[in-house]
Image (cartoon, rainbow, N blue to C red; front, top):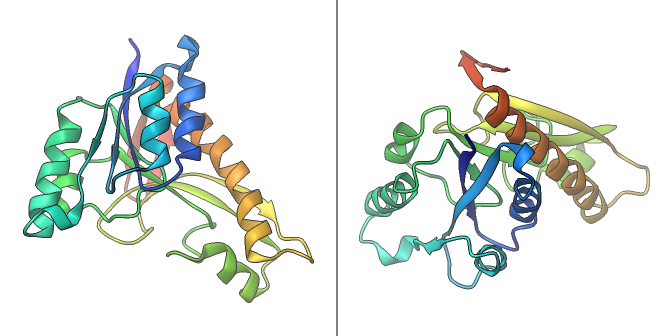
Length: 201
C-alpha cells in the first residue's frame, strides 16, 4: 500500500518538488496527496497544482487567534489521513493541537547539524562560528524550535571561500537528497521513536 504524504510549504517548494519527483516512481512507496501553504501564491502550491495534487491555504491572519488557525490547519491536514506530514520550508510553528494529532508523524528539515545553530540563520551562524563541517538535519517536530528527535543528518564541508549564500545552496542540495531518501525509507520500512532516538526499520 502506498503511504500518504501531506507537505506544508511557505515558498518555492524545491524540497516539495524533490518529493513529487521521487513519488512518481511506485517503488518509492509514498505519494504526496495534498500540499498546504500559509500564504497565497506560493510557487510550491503551483508546483503541486500543475500535477493535479490538491492544495489548500490557511493564513494565520485570517483567524481570530493562533489556536483557531492551528485547529483549522489540523482539521484540513487530517482530512487527507496522512501517514506523514512534511514541513518543506513551512515557516510557521504548529501548535499543540497539530502536534497531538500527528504524534511522531510531523517532520521538518533544517540547514544545520542540530542541536547546533537552530533558528533562521543556520549557515550564517556556522560560518561565524568557524566550524569546518555544516550540514542538514531531518527531525520529528515537537513544541520547540528545531528541538525534536533527529531522524537523519548529513555533513557538508565548509569551504574557506564560502559565504552564507554559497554554503546555504550546497546544504540545500544535500538536504533535498536526505529528505527524499529518509522519507522513502520511513514509509517503506517504518520507524519508532524511543526518547530522543529515532530508529528506522
